[in-house]
Image 1 (cartoon, rainbow, N blue to C red):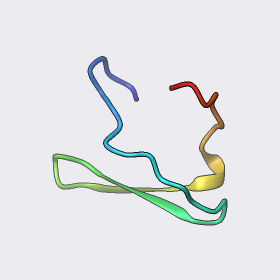
Image 2: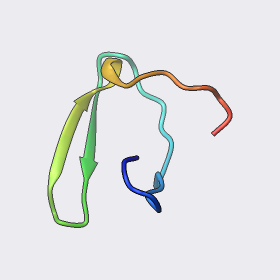
Image 3: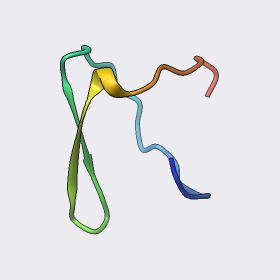
Image 4: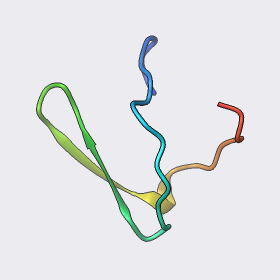
Amino acid sequence: LKREGDAPKGIYVAAMHNYLLIFTDAERCYWLKVWKIPETDSHL
């Protein structure tokens, strides 16, 4: 999350070789390999 006020819409379980599709309000779609997302603490 890059801007103040940004918040996740959901939390999902995925395998490391899946792709995450991110849809924006500006009708854009971005994809990201799940294994490139840094791990975080379980306390959000």
